[in-house]
Length: 404
Ligand code: TRP
Ligand code: SF4
Image (cartoon, rainbow, N blue to C red):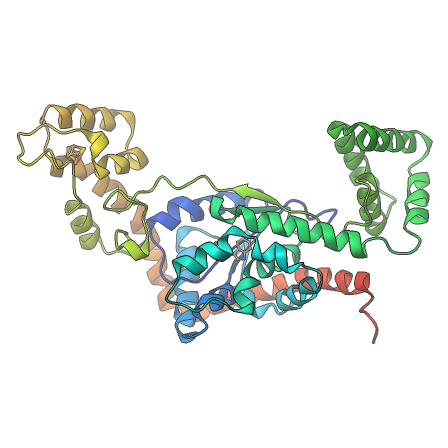
């Protein structure tokens, strides 16, 4: 499929960290589940990205891959709606990464804020490696291999989408102007007929001379609507409109995932490393136990001491799970010592139990059926590979590498 028609494509990846928890569910997975019904979605396990920091113990990655895929499926990612795959099974990512590395200035990678930040944060690991410096470029290759238009990510990843856009721009600039580009564009414009050609040329001028974005959008829509113009020529025209060459690798947009409101059991962000999480496969007794043991407003030493929900991590869970009626019952009951903390936790426990019961069941089914999971992923890898192969063929061709 070509970039002209792939702008509705969504792609996102997750490093294999093993079993997922409610933080992942509310932060990322629920969003993926929604997107899979609205766009053509590709979701993948970024195992090579894990290797950039885990290269000393790569054996740990395997189990994490399958645990994570099972949790995706359990959370409602549907292999009928989205393509699920593993990065390392699509070697086109590695080829594109290598080709892009030829034209990516070192300074661009050194200046990505996560580079130094992560090195500082993961001091116990030696991350002064070629692979780790290339982390954002590998991510660019992941995205550009599918010519994805939208990339759902958290705020911490926006710099990686930004460098992807720069790399795509540089690639198109270097390799998009094949000989005969202008002639091909002129011929395609004539094919549209006098009236539409005039609209195209007027809009192009308005955009290029006055920066009129709506003129650009009008011309882009006009190009997309043409029936008798080849995809290749459409791409040339889209490139021509923006004053560049043919767009071989379109620039993706970050689709910012709203920060998860899911707090951990101690009120901090839910995270595996803080040990304050409820896993998606948590057993009912453990869910009960974990929420019952949650700290509350320290002012409520005795049952008769009034408290302040704003100082209590349980309140944050009510913000995720409870309706207005329950919330005002909590607020009033807490401030007047009318309810005890265990009473207050009860509706949260019930809500988490109800949310996780079907997820846990699906995860159990999938763990009992590893062959099915392997098949789902194998099929996803095949589909992904086909899409990535199309891009790589165009990339090699544009770079003059399709000789045999
Ligand atoms: N770096 C991303 C993260 O840590 C994971 C990732 C790898 C990714 N390749 C990607 C996300 C491509 C979106 C698109 O979360
Ligand atoms: Fe927290 Fe609820 Fe106890 Fe108030 S009553 S301190 S909100 S658990």
